[in-house]
Image 1 (cartoon, rainbow, N blue to C red):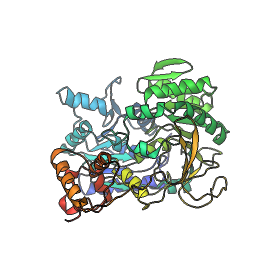
Image 2 (image 1 turned 45 degrees about the vertical axis):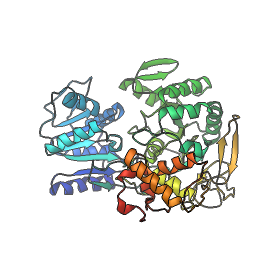
Image 3 (image 1 turned 60 degrees about the horizontal axis):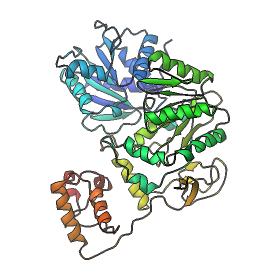
Image 4 (image 1 turned 45 degrees about the horizontal axis):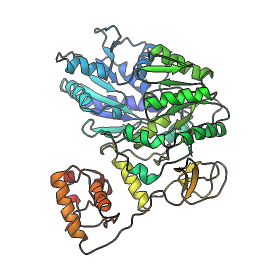
Length: 509
């Protein structure tokens, strides 16, 4: 059955039509989980044009096809395991298949005459292979329309981002439920800040594995205890583990504890004590069981992070630190959809994550380098330019202002959090998580930094922050002042390669 478009969806479609009157364009439509991005794309795909819609996840491909079928839109599928229908003006496809068929094999099989190229979850598809696909279709005259609830790292991919609707508007209209974030345990903030990151800016899986393994026995009981306390209705949950192996372990452990849980990854589904191929039918069976209550939850690494819709899920459990705001928003967004008789979405954070509120309308730095905005936020909290969130020591609700907890009424206005200890216990820690650095001053400071600056620019790709920290490590944690000549003026530039920061953006000598 075709659904009638909402007002904000109509606005988005009208905006695209207006942009097309001015010629070819590259745009990202920014809209939160629950805003109906798939329906927006379906409305656009109904236009009498040749169009190609690509995604990197089977879950999204299946969902797209289902919606188009409901709209009565004939379409072909350019993906492994599907019989092609090249005569259809609308084609859905997998980015991986498109790369394999059109570039990697050396035989170009690009779809001809494409007017629009749609890319779902654009923020997650910005690598060189994806960019090559976008550019190839762009040279053929196709406009690029991307979709994302968390537009970031899009410089060079799109020319503009259009905000379709905000989280707060969707909550006010009843499409999303207000989130309650509970900080159910945290790792030492300084330890987490030193974790290595991958090219996308997220913490490396190996780094997380070493960190989480030390405290897994504490987190186990914590997950069960807090879920029982916060979700007495046993609402369906989605658990995000730090890797696939850990996700399987969580599903098996929770099932053994009387909480029936499935695991899903790209290759396998584990449920009821057995492994199955991760095909569409088996996944849909698990999702249906979440709806009817025969499964309480589903565990995964990242495969359900984006584009997956299951309104029964109202409890999100995150078991590890998350570096990027976009990853955090995508994970938690799986639990925000409105559901009968549900007043709030419950977020259990067992990683001590410090990101802006989930219902915040804080704009996205879509042109910035991945991970820079998050590092700036931590630096600002360290320097008291931005307040740290407050965790209620009584109920563990995390709030961002006010002396009184809105959940339990307890009054406590100082930053604190429950921190995992080496002895396997949780301890309430008072005071700032990101402590100010011990700055010492010397008449040689400017000379020291100048030498360090030129050495870094000439010999490495380090950021100013890395060079700054390197000096502190080598000098018994003596931190230089941050206002010396040749230091970046802007906080964000501290987290970009020092050689790429223009001289005009450095403090003058």
